[in-house]
Image (cartoon, rainbow, N blue to C red; front, side, top):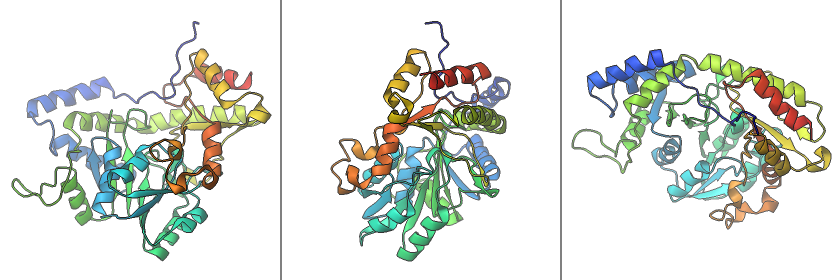
Length: 370
């Protein structure tokens, strides 16, 4: 097999001519962590780029989820989606809370607002939706439900870096939004993440919680953890931010080619794009209907792998089907028919700024020619 390996994701790498001088400056400053110069600069730059006022950097994308629940003092039950990466539900579990799964909308893969309302009990205190693949949730409907029942809303926006609706960021929805800057994401700091809130007082509490709860040299005000971003990754992120628009434009070109070429392939379906949404093209999921397509999703996945094309069954298995969660009453397959179908049919095709036209054509050939 001589085919070049095509991975499902490939990290956006900083320009070395820009990055190396920053590394030297970090060396000269001798300040590697604890809210250093580049940490502060990246927070400012991201707030401006994303159109948000208050953002706190973290060492990965899971800790902002855990900290958001802590910062809002959430208790009891949290309604969430089974169609996500496990970190979403893990963050609820790590806080000693009960995740309650509800089914998703077949047109977006996001939480179905009608199902949310059906799952509310006297123990429910929050909703944790996910903008799956960067598709915006029905923000207005979710907020209306939250307001009516007095619930907090914390968005897992790991896939939604700079996604907008009608020119406005979706990262100001709800009470808090979290981001992931993992190497597989559209924008990355190698590992990293962020938590976005609406006021200075909340940001201060978040910043205490991510630094062991220290409010001064000798004062601890909360049982915090260590989740600070270091100077090297902050500098890395500053360099990548200069090139993120070009990277998204390259991803868009690949997505458009996929969409046009697969539009009329029997048994292959895709989410529709909305005209009012500015996407970041985090992922490109397709769904394989075995009866219409002729072979199963797993057979196509294996065929692609044999030819050195690494798709990903993202999200499979469903979170609710993992042993640690499937005992929950809300995890039953009968309760989650749409999410289970999606998990059983999905393959995310390779999607990153490094894809060439030849790469895209090779991938499409494998999908179209069974």
